[in-house]
Image (tube, rainbow, N blue to C red; front, side, top):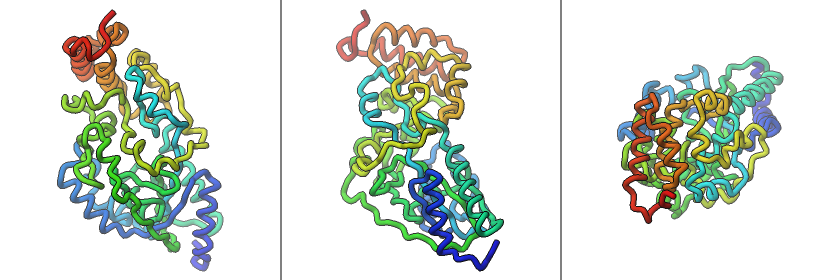
Length: 361
């Protein structure tokens, strides 16, 4: 690496190159995460991470970047918008026979998209300064991506714990490039949540124990994606027709009125996930699931968990013959996990008051 290089100019160039590669914002920060480390330790001590044991198994590597990648001096943090056309979420949620999939998962898997662009950014830097030490991360290692992005000036962590940007809302992915370059750093922005508490009150499962504090064990995103077991009874009605993730705390955030639909082709909706019927998705064979989720973040939950989630949604759907028939067709599924949730869904339809849902024809 050329140690005589003008790193101030290089930082400006990095931001321009990042924008040209499709990132909406690029910031640079140091590796000091002392405050974030304390908050993480408190969160873990409360058990709010549930079964996400990977949040603690790496020791301090998550909060001390140089322990993860020795020699790290600076972190280049990037964001890329993913918001689909509106008014997707509100319309789908109003139809209980439709499947609600979190906005970030309706297109191609963001991990691959961002990591490829980050490596391209590193190649541009190498062309100027020569070989340097770097490592690209996109939600794929023990990295505190939101605190790093906040320190780099990309936004602030809101009361819903998501990173929020005054000009772009919160519908964006984050990525990092750990480097050994002594680049000038950016300054964080102020918290602009103010007295707003819309995200805290809208949460269907009341997963926020306090502002800026999420109990993942109660979060629908955790329950439908990260959690592999039997969904606790207390949360099943609240899940509604959400089969993969939940965006409620983002939908109500006032700053998301500034979110712009993405121009990134890879994030455009795939396989009609913006407007899919629960019954159609529930009928997918495992081969169909694997084929239609290829290159998608949804693939990671696996087929059984996919059916588990949809069974709950169908249990919350109107009591009509097609719903009952779909559930009965899966009542003898080989998976104990699937059968348990199908049985619950059928029980919901047989026990609910006849005037509470549409009667059987």
